Image (cartoon, rainbow, N blue to C red):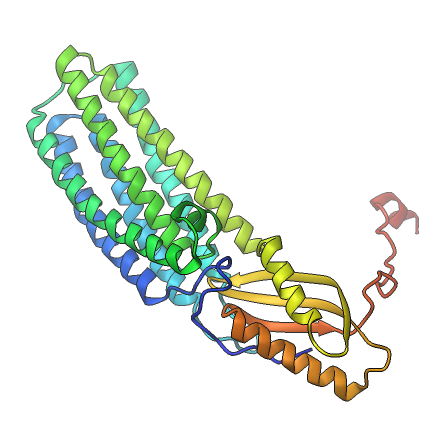
Length: 341
């Protein structure tokens, strides 16, 4: 078993996410400030125009603001150094706070939108002056667009470092903070368009149902975004591996060492944004001495850290890995057997 690999800010072999650190923090802060101002403006516009879609958008922006606060906490707490109680660090705490952010979007944003939309469809409401609502929507689109462009620039920059597309980067990255900002800003722009359509159709037809339908559509949009982000964070919180292609590259790195005959088992798990643990069963030559195994283990760590910047820990088990070393455990008895015993 080797010692922990030193921290690195490099991208992990184009597949594990890079520790974007200050860049992600800047993206989150910009998005949070923009959403707070937008939420206040939308609230005023919704109250003046009596628009459920506008009030839903106000709730949407408020939820996004809370989300940015939680993501900021995630970035700060997830980068703490390892200690005695948490020897592999606090990286996964990032995903816990990011998951809470998804729940905020789900409950506050989507829940309020559904309630507003259904209430408007069932009870109706006379439309007020829509002019201020249109002005607020236009200004909000500009502010949200600026935040969205910053997030997109970060995604594209990171994707270029990976040598891949922005879509694949967003699908596979372990930096869920920038992923959340990108998704939420994209949803915000779509939500503004939906709110404008609802206002316009109500103004043209005089039927408030269109405003209610727009509010419900915004709720569905938020529900989809929250579900997508929650799934990604849950997977990383549990402990996700990197792709089979990268695992094979890591296996070949170890298998290429002197005195190594085979690497029958290799496992990886992401422990935080841009942080990876590599564990492997290694079959050494029968002629290898203890000193040979120690040298090979040190060289394995040096190679993996140098060529795959996200590697934080490397653990090697010098066994054949054919399954015979696995401990046999007695299956648990059911409650009835326990009482009878």
